[in-house]
Length: 314
Length: 314
Image 1 (cartoon, rainbow over the protein chains, first blue to last red):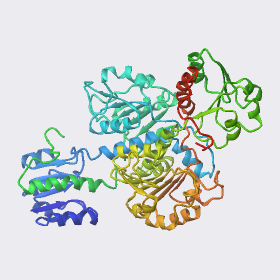
Image 2: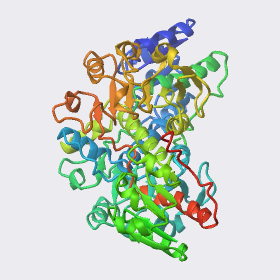
Image 3: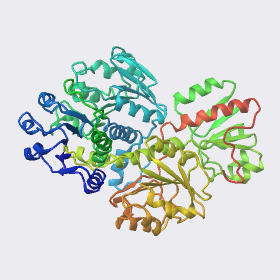
């Protein structure tokens, strides 16, 4: 069995894998080589190097393990036509993203940006405006795997969580649920409004001026889903007129965010360059999902974790 | 019943109190007036305005409510001699302090200082060194009320907690316990070392060069107890030689920290000017403790929450 990685894990991660699966031949090489693809039984990729052209070399390939959550850049039809199984690392972003969101929330509540600035000036001052997360209410747009993980952590800090999705049906770690239709009525309760919504027709410009008007004047708005959720002009207006207190943005209508965007210097706006899921442990976590799947695969099983239905796109 | 506050809570906190206890006369005035002290049955103070001189005016006083955890600046003997009951807001710091500690830990793990600096330069870069808190191990020196609250939150993030105290006896939210005597053996396991130890003879310079050598090279050391724990020269040496990765300091051998201290600009050292317990909700939280106590007091009860034994100092 020949297993071809189109990226190179660190030696401390690669070596135990090769040792554990000594019955397999491993190839680790950055970038896709059609020669290697032709010989591979299993391909491990970030999912951005396959296309209709190189797929014609994948004559032996039976399983593609995608070390990423998104599969939208993959040549779906060519893979389906060849009957190749695809699985991915869905859910891997949940923990680092939830940690990033809590990091930003707590940093604001406990005035860390203020503190860092005063340290640079070597100024001992106790006048930072610190408040508490405890007893806050958070509204979470899209309480799926990531949203529920944030909800779980927020509840540990004594926060009341309100989930908001299309149906208003119950979701894990949400004290209350509301449907999209009832969003405006729920917003005045929230000290923190977090979106982890994916990009769909329904979520495009879902948040409008009226929603920001309905939020508390000191609310923290966080977009960690997709930039299509709100027209950036509407958001900037909400910040400039003091409709809300803070905005923490990990996603933007256009990425990378233009160096001319007013968001970079808008007071109380935090620009995070779509890195909330990044982690030095990403490959390690991916291999933690890959290994038991490879074990099953070698036993002839195909019911692997996170099998992707490419015809549906997830 | 005349209740004298030597500070002025905000109107939104003061007014409900006056309304709820309409049978009492309230006086709110910043700074201690001996005239008012002479008329007061109950005194509410931050605990720094009483002394042997003004205590002679406290002829009617029967109860002092200290809106602070420390009582070391109070004229203990004069209060004991007059048979005045003292209670305080012990435990009130637990939640904001634990939130501060988590804020600092998560900010480091998720590279927020790096991110803030790049935002100032309007630079879209994904190269920040982000890692995860999940699966870390934290060693907590002094797992009392504050240490256990940090332990509880860390466990919610999937962190293994090791408590360390004199006896090594079990403490809440600690997966393991070690005694001071076994500290050096436990340190190599810890990704995060947190002290919330009080100042005593035993804790003075408890941490020595050998302890920093025993820590992981990327360990985060956090002192949120008292500055006597470690000689700052030893700590600076540990940072400069790369024995540890980060130091987050809320307390110092001398406070305020001198503008000349090398700690201000030592890479990977965060200087927090002893503000980790500060919160805009401090007075609100204090009144939440005061109100049920006042209710009991009006019913003739003296078994109030957090009664202080001034002869012992806590």
